Amino acid sequence: MRMAFTLDDLPVYPHLALPDGHTPVSVAARIIDALDRNGVSGVFALANSWPLDTDPELARILDDWVAAGHHVGNHTHSHPLLNDVSAEEFNHDVSVADALLERWTCKAPLRVFRHPLELWGNTEDKRVRVNAHLEALDYHCAGVTSWFYEWEWDRAWRHLLQTGRADEAEALKSEFVDYVAAQVAHDAATCKTVFGHDLVAIGLIHPVAFFTEVADKFFERLFAEGVSFVPLAEALQDPAYAQSGTSVSDAFLVYQNKVALAEGRHLDAVPPTHKACLERVFELATPLRPPRRGILVQNMRPWPNGWEGSRP
Ligand SMILES: [Zn+2]
Image 1 (cartoon, rainbow, N blue to C red):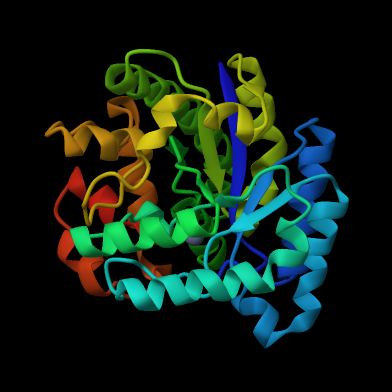
Image 2: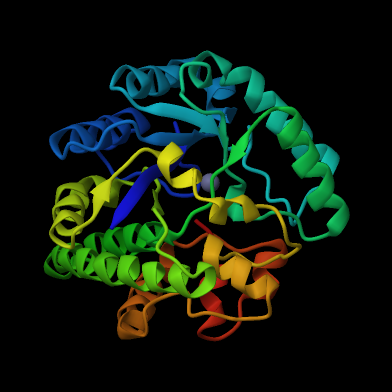
């Protein structure tokens, strides 16, 4: 199967503290090196521009990313959640990022936007006004068909390290890679269920320290599973991806599950074979998870809908 690999929230992933010895620059550098070692090129990073306001030195991360042959797209300035803000606030945030990221986005083969948490608008008014703004700025919206909750795996891994359980922390790495293989297969199947044909998958990872520990194993395993990595533009050629932003919802779901939900179908977010594994990871992550807020709090229901409350 083919997959376009993407990275969200460069240059600084805001929701997690980095472990000692890691910095946003070192995490990005290790991901760039892993992509290079594994021959994965032309990867889109959907970037937030707020770090450029707080520390202009962080621009170096985006410079290095583009110098390594990868691309930058717009993921808003401050990562507002469309469930929580007005269309005007959101559109302003998009425009701020549009201006601040322009020096990198202008070098990309495609103008790409990704909604924070893939939230397209929880009211019709927001959905329409945000879509109109993105269209006016000539953005292609890139959905996500596979994400891997690596932000929770990162918390679980750090919690195990902090509590002296180094062996368990190490074991988490191969458990993650096994789970990723299952999630990719699960998502390919749900895409086929929803759209009636195989899609070029769109995978997503965030720049967290845990991923830098497992990146080589991650790519090796996906290659072994028959995955080949292709440009995002190749994925977005499929008309199946034209449904981004077409439904009103407050749900945190991957693309195909959101399209299915608009049609009244609730599909499993994670492979049934790995629910117990993920429940344990979420449990281990709990001490390091920040308090939830807004609609995500209300969405926190017992399993299985609890996945929708896992904020990346
Ligand atoms: Zn994001």
